[in-house]
Image (cartoon, rainbow, N blue to C red; front, top):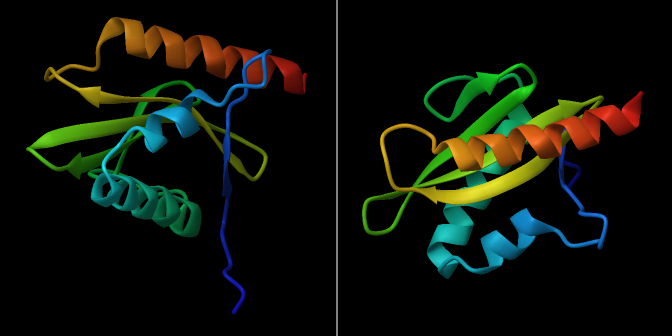
Length: 118
């Protein structure tokens, strides 16, 4: 069975070839991984998709919002390049507002990804 995705999720890679979001997802409990994976797949299938699953944070920067176990909220920041959803940064949100350090890291990685395209 072929799945028709509108965009395809790929992991951001550092210069050392690490994939920080993949590592973050691997650190989650199995049921939480499934929930986050399902939300990422929903974005792939239905892009553009809006609130509550996806929220725009900045120019070319969005977040997938997933409720996971213990009333926690997982965020995965991403950007879009052509038909790719590039997963830039993942974290567990501990406050109402997206933490500045997490937002800055997402923006830095977005600039690296989109800058390489030019």
